[in-house]
Image 1: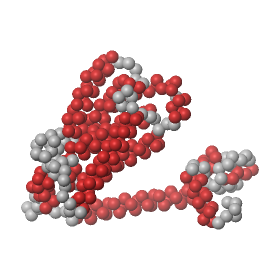
Image 2: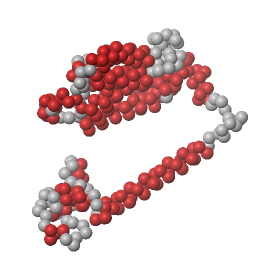
Image 3: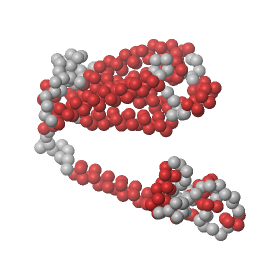
Image 4: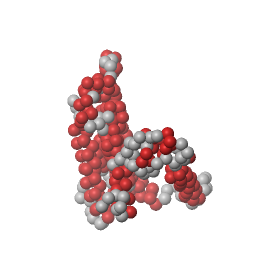
Length: 318
Protein backbone atom coordinates (compact mmCIF):
# COMPACT_ATOMS: atom_id res chain seq x y z
CA UNK A 1 0.00 0.00 0.00
CA UNK A 2 1.48 3.31 -1.02
CA UNK A 3 1.61 6.28 1.29
CA UNK A 4 -0.54 8.32 -1.12
CA UNK A 5 -3.35 5.73 -1.18
CA UNK A 6 -2.97 4.50 2.38
CA UNK A 7 -5.27 5.11 5.31
CA UNK A 8 -5.14 8.56 6.96
CA UNK A 9 -3.81 7.08 10.20
CA UNK A 10 -1.06 5.25 8.29
CA UNK A 11 -0.05 8.50 6.60
CA UNK A 12 -0.10 10.29 9.96
CA UNK A 13 2.19 7.76 11.65
CA UNK A 14 4.43 7.68 8.60
CA UNK A 15 4.84 11.47 8.73
CA UNK A 16 5.33 11.33 12.50
CA UNK A 17 8.12 8.77 12.12
CA UNK A 18 9.80 10.83 9.39
CA UNK A 19 9.59 13.91 11.58
CA UNK A 20 11.09 12.08 14.60
CA UNK A 21 13.90 10.80 12.37
CA UNK A 22 14.60 14.37 11.22
CA UNK A 23 13.64 13.69 7.61
CA UNK A 24 10.85 16.26 7.28
CA UNK A 25 9.42 19.42 8.76
CA UNK A 26 5.89 19.15 10.22
CA UNK A 27 4.89 22.37 8.42
CA UNK A 28 6.40 21.42 5.10
CA UNK A 29 5.91 18.20 3.26
CA UNK A 30 8.55 16.55 1.20
CA UNK A 31 11.94 18.23 1.29
CA UNK A 32 13.47 16.51 -1.72
CA UNK A 33 15.61 18.77 -3.84
CA UNK A 34 13.94 19.83 -7.09
CA UNK A 35 14.89 22.56 -9.57
CA UNK A 36 13.35 25.97 -8.89
CA UNK A 37 12.18 28.18 -11.73
CA UNK A 38 11.40 31.89 -11.51
CA UNK A 39 8.08 31.28 -13.21
CA UNK A 40 7.08 29.03 -10.30
CA UNK A 41 7.87 31.73 -7.73
CA UNK A 42 6.20 34.78 -9.21
CA UNK A 43 2.65 35.44 -8.14
CA UNK A 44 2.53 32.80 -5.38
CA UNK A 45 2.08 33.58 -1.69
CA UNK A 46 2.77 30.04 -0.48
CA UNK A 47 5.11 27.94 -2.59
CA UNK A 48 4.67 24.23 -3.13
CA UNK A 49 7.30 22.41 -1.03
CA UNK A 50 7.57 19.68 -3.68
CA UNK A 51 9.08 22.22 -6.10
CA UNK A 52 11.71 23.59 -3.73
CA UNK A 53 14.87 22.31 -2.16
CA UNK A 54 15.32 22.03 1.59
CA UNK A 55 16.91 25.45 2.16
CA UNK A 56 14.18 27.23 0.21
CA UNK A 57 11.42 25.41 2.08
CA UNK A 58 12.97 26.33 5.44
CA UNK A 59 13.14 29.98 4.37
CA UNK A 60 9.42 29.92 3.58
CA UNK A 61 8.57 28.15 6.82
CA UNK A 62 10.37 30.78 8.85
CA UNK A 63 8.38 33.53 7.14
CA UNK A 64 5.16 33.51 9.16
CA UNK A 65 3.46 35.96 6.79
CA UNK A 66 3.61 33.37 3.98
CA UNK A 67 2.89 30.29 6.10
CA UNK A 68 -0.58 30.14 7.62
CA UNK A 69 0.20 27.06 9.68
CA UNK A 70 3.27 28.67 11.22
CA UNK A 71 1.35 31.90 11.82
CA UNK A 72 -1.43 29.98 13.61
CA UNK A 73 1.11 28.04 15.66
CA UNK A 74 2.93 31.21 16.73
CA UNK A 75 -0.35 32.81 17.79
CA UNK A 76 -1.38 29.71 19.75
CA UNK A 77 2.07 29.54 21.38
CA UNK A 78 1.95 33.16 22.52
CA UNK A 79 -1.62 32.92 23.85
CA UNK A 80 -0.81 29.67 25.69
CA UNK A 81 2.27 31.23 27.27
CA UNK A 82 0.30 34.24 28.50
CA UNK A 83 -2.50 32.00 29.83
CA UNK A 84 -0.03 29.77 31.66
CA UNK A 85 1.71 32.77 33.27
CA UNK A 86 -1.62 34.23 34.39
CA UNK A 87 -2.67 30.88 35.84
CA UNK A 88 0.62 30.58 37.74
CA UNK A 89 0.27 34.13 39.10
CA UNK A 90 -3.31 33.38 40.20
CA UNK A 91 -2.25 30.20 42.01
CA UNK A 92 0.60 32.00 43.80
CA UNK A 93 -1.69 34.84 44.88
CA UNK A 94 -4.25 32.31 46.10
CA UNK A 95 -1.60 30.56 48.21
CA UNK A 96 -0.38 33.87 49.63
CA UNK A 97 -3.93 34.81 50.63
CA UNK A 98 -4.05 31.82 52.98
CA UNK A 99 -0.82 32.75 54.77
CA UNK A 100 -1.10 34.31 58.26
CA UNK A 101 -0.72 38.06 58.46
CA UNK A 102 2.84 39.25 58.83
CA UNK A 103 3.70 40.46 62.33
CA UNK A 104 0.50 39.23 63.96
CA UNK A 105 0.89 38.13 67.58
CA UNK A 106 -1.38 35.16 66.88
CA UNK A 107 0.97 33.66 64.33
CA UNK A 108 2.37 30.29 65.52
CA UNK A 109 6.12 30.23 66.11
CA UNK A 110 6.23 26.52 65.31
CA UNK A 111 3.61 24.36 63.66
CA UNK A 112 3.26 20.66 64.40
CA UNK A 113 5.61 19.64 61.58
CA UNK A 114 8.48 21.88 62.67
CA UNK A 115 7.88 20.91 66.27
CA UNK A 116 8.26 17.24 65.32
CA UNK A 117 11.53 17.95 63.50
CA UNK A 118 12.99 19.91 66.42
CA UNK A 119 11.83 17.81 69.35
CA UNK A 120 12.07 14.27 67.98
CA UNK A 121 14.48 14.57 65.06
CA UNK A 122 17.55 13.35 66.94
CA UNK A 123 15.73 10.38 68.47
CA UNK A 124 14.04 9.28 65.26
CA UNK A 125 16.76 9.98 62.67
CA UNK A 126 19.88 10.20 64.85
CA UNK A 127 21.59 13.22 63.27
CA UNK A 128 22.79 16.16 65.33
CA UNK A 129 22.25 18.43 62.31
CA UNK A 130 18.49 18.99 62.28
CA UNK A 131 18.61 20.16 58.66
CA UNK A 132 20.06 16.80 57.59
CA UNK A 133 17.33 15.08 59.58
CA UNK A 134 14.75 16.97 57.58
CA UNK A 135 16.08 16.79 54.01
CA UNK A 136 17.56 13.26 54.17
CA UNK A 137 15.20 11.69 56.70
CA UNK A 138 11.70 13.13 56.93
CA UNK A 139 11.77 14.54 53.40
CA UNK A 140 14.08 11.97 51.86
CA UNK A 141 11.69 11.42 48.95
CA UNK A 142 12.15 15.05 47.81
CA UNK A 143 15.94 14.85 48.04
CA UNK A 144 15.99 11.59 46.12
CA UNK A 145 13.95 13.28 43.38
CA UNK A 146 16.42 16.17 43.23
CA UNK A 147 19.30 13.72 42.86
CA UNK A 148 17.46 11.98 40.02
CA UNK A 149 17.05 15.38 38.33
CA UNK A 150 20.84 15.87 38.46
CA UNK A 151 21.36 12.43 36.93
CA UNK A 152 18.83 13.09 34.15
CA UNK A 153 20.31 16.53 33.42
CA UNK A 154 23.82 15.12 33.05
CA UNK A 155 22.51 12.26 30.90
CA UNK A 156 20.71 14.69 28.58
CA UNK A 157 23.88 16.73 28.16
CA UNK A 158 25.80 13.55 27.33
CA UNK A 159 23.21 12.53 24.75
CA UNK A 160 23.13 15.97 23.09
CA UNK A 161 26.82 16.88 23.12
CA UNK A 162 28.77 13.62 23.21
CA UNK A 163 30.78 12.99 20.07
CA UNK A 164 30.86 9.63 18.31
CA UNK A 165 33.92 7.40 18.25
CA UNK A 166 34.46 8.32 14.60
CA UNK A 167 34.44 12.04 15.38
CA UNK A 168 36.83 11.55 18.30
CA UNK A 169 39.26 9.63 16.08
CA UNK A 170 39.07 12.31 13.39
CA UNK A 171 39.72 15.11 15.89
CA UNK A 172 42.66 13.51 17.69
CA UNK A 173 45.05 15.61 15.65
CA UNK A 174 43.37 18.82 16.82
CA UNK A 175 42.76 17.63 20.39
CA UNK A 176 45.58 19.86 21.58
CA UNK A 177 43.24 22.83 21.13
CA UNK A 178 41.34 21.78 24.24
CA UNK A 179 44.47 21.47 26.37
CA UNK A 180 45.62 24.52 28.36
CA UNK A 181 48.98 26.11 27.75
CA UNK A 182 51.61 25.21 30.37
CA UNK A 183 51.72 27.81 33.13
CA UNK A 184 54.22 27.00 35.88
CA UNK A 185 52.72 29.44 38.40
CA UNK A 186 49.17 28.19 37.83
CA UNK A 187 50.29 24.57 38.02
CA UNK A 188 52.15 25.08 41.29
CA UNK A 189 49.16 26.85 42.85
CA UNK A 190 46.81 24.14 41.58
CA UNK A 191 49.02 21.37 43.00
CA UNK A 192 48.72 23.04 46.38
CA UNK A 193 45.05 24.00 46.26
CA UNK A 194 43.39 20.95 44.65
CA UNK A 195 44.33 18.45 47.40
CA UNK A 196 43.09 20.94 50.00
CA UNK A 197 39.86 21.46 48.06
CA UNK A 198 39.29 17.71 47.80
CA UNK A 199 39.97 17.19 51.51
CA UNK A 200 37.67 20.03 52.46
CA UNK A 201 34.94 18.68 50.18
CA UNK A 202 35.27 15.20 51.72
CA UNK A 203 35.16 16.75 55.20
CA UNK A 204 31.92 18.60 54.32
CA UNK A 205 30.35 15.38 53.01
CA UNK A 206 31.38 13.19 55.95
CA UNK A 207 30.31 15.75 58.56
CA UNK A 208 27.00 16.66 57.00
CA UNK A 209 25.10 14.88 59.79
CA UNK A 210 27.15 16.60 62.51
CA UNK A 211 27.59 20.16 61.26
CA UNK A 212 26.44 22.42 58.40
CA UNK A 213 27.25 20.75 55.09
CA UNK A 214 26.35 17.50 53.42
CA UNK A 215 26.33 15.90 50.02
CA UNK A 216 25.24 18.86 47.92
CA UNK A 217 27.72 21.40 49.26
CA UNK A 218 30.55 18.87 49.61
CA UNK A 219 29.96 17.50 46.12
CA UNK A 220 29.99 21.02 44.68
CA UNK A 221 33.35 21.64 46.37
CA UNK A 222 34.84 18.43 44.97
CA UNK A 223 33.44 19.23 41.52
CA UNK A 224 35.05 22.68 41.65
CA UNK A 225 38.39 21.02 42.47
CA UNK A 226 38.07 18.71 39.45
CA UNK A 227 37.26 21.65 37.17
CA UNK A 228 40.26 23.60 38.48
CA UNK A 229 42.55 20.63 37.88
CA UNK A 230 41.37 19.99 34.31
CA UNK A 231 41.57 23.72 33.53
CA UNK A 232 45.21 23.76 34.62
CA UNK A 233 46.55 20.38 33.43
CA UNK A 234 44.10 19.38 30.70
CA UNK A 235 41.88 16.39 30.06
CA UNK A 236 44.63 13.89 29.27
CA UNK A 237 46.27 14.22 32.67
CA UNK A 238 42.91 14.30 34.47
CA UNK A 239 41.88 11.04 32.80
CA UNK A 240 44.68 9.25 34.62
CA UNK A 241 42.60 9.23 37.81
CA UNK A 242 39.13 10.33 36.59
CA UNK A 243 38.39 8.72 33.25
CA UNK A 244 35.01 8.25 31.59
CA UNK A 245 34.81 4.73 33.06
CA UNK A 246 35.43 6.08 36.55
CA UNK A 247 32.78 8.72 35.97
CA UNK A 248 30.18 6.15 34.88
CA UNK A 249 30.86 3.83 37.83
CA UNK A 250 30.75 6.66 40.37
CA UNK A 251 27.65 8.37 38.99
CA UNK A 252 25.52 5.33 38.18
CA UNK A 253 26.68 3.39 41.23
CA UNK A 254 25.92 6.28 43.61
CA UNK A 255 22.40 6.73 42.24
CA UNK A 256 21.67 2.98 42.34
CA UNK A 257 22.86 2.63 45.94
CA UNK A 258 20.91 5.74 46.91
CA UNK A 259 17.82 4.26 45.23
CA UNK A 260 18.18 0.96 47.12
CA UNK A 261 18.63 2.78 50.44
CA UNK A 262 15.61 5.03 49.97
CA UNK A 263 13.50 2.12 48.72
CA UNK A 264 14.16 0.37 52.02
CA UNK A 265 13.13 3.45 53.99
CA UNK A 266 10.03 3.97 51.84
CA UNK A 267 8.96 0.34 52.22
CA UNK A 268 9.43 0.19 55.98
CA UNK A 269 7.82 3.56 56.54
CA UNK A 270 4.81 2.86 54.34
CA UNK A 271 4.18 -0.48 56.06
CA UNK A 272 4.91 0.66 59.63
CA UNK A 273 7.85 -1.75 59.91
CA UNK A 274 10.69 -1.30 62.36
CA UNK A 275 13.92 0.09 60.95
CA UNK A 276 16.70 -2.40 61.74
CA UNK A 277 19.56 -0.05 60.77
CA UNK A 278 21.10 1.25 64.03
CA UNK A 279 21.22 5.02 64.51
CA UNK A 280 24.43 4.96 66.53
CA UNK A 281 25.45 7.50 69.14
CA UNK A 282 24.44 11.07 68.22
CA UNK A 283 27.51 13.25 67.71
CA UNK A 284 29.80 10.42 66.55
CA UNK A 285 31.02 10.21 62.97
CA UNK A 286 29.38 6.76 62.57
CA UNK A 287 25.86 7.71 63.57
CA UNK A 288 22.51 8.83 62.16
CA UNK A 289 21.77 5.53 60.44
CA UNK A 290 22.04 5.80 56.66
CA UNK A 291 22.34 9.59 56.46
CA UNK A 292 26.15 9.39 56.24
CA UNK A 293 26.12 6.97 53.25
CA UNK A 294 23.35 9.01 51.61
CA UNK A 295 25.50 12.14 51.90
CA UNK A 296 28.33 10.25 50.19
CA UNK A 297 26.02 9.13 47.36
CA UNK A 298 24.68 12.64 46.86
CA UNK A 299 28.19 14.13 46.98
CA UNK A 300 29.42 11.79 44.24
CA UNK A 301 26.37 12.58 42.11
CA UNK A 302 26.83 16.35 42.42
CA UNK A 303 30.59 16.26 41.79
CA UNK A 304 30.20 14.06 38.69
CA UNK A 305 27.40 16.26 37.33
CA UNK A 306 29.44 19.46 37.67
CA UNK A 307 32.47 17.88 35.98
CA UNK A 308 30.33 16.39 33.20
CA UNK A 309 28.75 19.75 32.37
CA UNK A 310 32.16 21.41 32.15
CA UNK A 311 33.76 18.63 30.09
CA UNK A 312 30.88 18.20 27.65
CA UNK A 313 30.35 21.89 26.94
CA UNK A 314 34.07 22.51 26.50
CA UNK A 315 35.18 19.39 24.69
CA UNK A 316 32.19 17.21 23.81
CA UNK A 317 33.61 14.29 25.78
CA UNK A 318 35.01 13.23 29.12
